[in-house]
Amino acid sequence: MTRKFFGTDGIRGLTNKMPMTAEMALKIGQAAGAHFLRGEHRHRVVIGKDTRLSGYMMETALIAGFTSVGMDVVMVGPVPTPAVAMLTHSMRADLGVMISASHNKFVDNGIKLFGPEGYKLSDEDERAIEARLEQAPKLVPAEAIGRSKKIEDARGRYIHAAKLTFPPALTLAGLKVVIDCANGAAYQVAPSALWELGAEVKAIGVSPNGININDECGSTDTGLLKRTVVETGADIGLALDGDADRLIVVDETGEEVDGDQLMALIASSWNRRGALKGGGIVRGDLQGLEDRDHSKVDGKGNTKSHKKHDDDVIGLGRLGQPAHGARHDRHPHSPGHLSAAGGGGQAERWVVLDPHRRRGGHAGRLHRVRVTRWPAR
Image 1 (cartoon, helix red, strand yellow):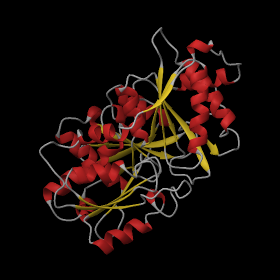
Image 2 (image 1 turned 135 degrees about the vertical axis):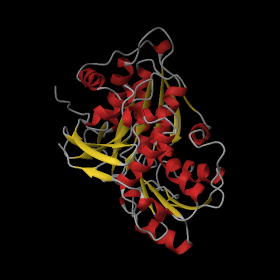
Image 3 (image 1 turned 60 degrees about the vertical axis):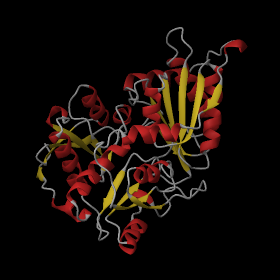
Image 4 (image 1 turned 180 degrees about the horizontal axis):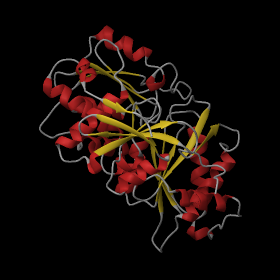
């Protein structure tokens, strides 16, 4: 059955136009909250957002929806999408919500939902929520209305979890890193995490004002990053998108590193540590709403393409098969379920920086990672 509102990555659209209105956000909160009211315990939802202006409006409407059906709300403020997935799981919440339109401009917004384990919702859950949107909500009695609270240490919790994915015996001391946070959700956590690990950090795209997210910065426009890397003599440059689940890497000359080489580097690193499940990781090329071309990159850097639905990439990970993903631009992308397992979007940055730091030299070495591409079938 075709979904009416949910796309490949939640619900997204132009703010104050259907389906991204405050009224619709309230209804989504009521429908999703009611769907995840399971058992007699006090139910909880974690809500994060990026830095776009409409986030305040959407957050308030969602809180009204969730609390009206009896679910407590924990607000974590501007944090990366992987942080919401991780916090949902670690806080034993029943549901997680990220308010973001990812790499889109500030005029758009979106609502991404995660289940209690930090995984993206199944098609069945999304269809069930859409069915509830067509029905009148079941409001709880006054004494059962949910409560909302904000936790101030959410960013610190995520930084700690992300650092746990970095080898404990290593530091980034001696490495000069430029990080472009796209004036988005990672504008505080990404520079802090890199600095705490010892890197010399030059942070750009860290002055959000509500309307400058993904504006001539971040993974959608790497011109500023490339110039800054060259001008400051940095060893490597990293660019994120608005909700920090996408990564682009440039070397010391300002040249972008091919995404397949990064995927091969990730696969090789995991393979050496015995962490490469199923013999490879999966890259997806976006070709439409329902059909995608995916590639499996094995521990030797070989890439083989095949057709697979985007949600199947997450399904494979839950079954212990190849679990990492990449977008159509061939740059690594972190599904929420990886975050729940520990660090999410930070994990690729560690894999890129770890061998680079140990071997010395510049990021140009990443271009020499061998990748053998096989044709799609």
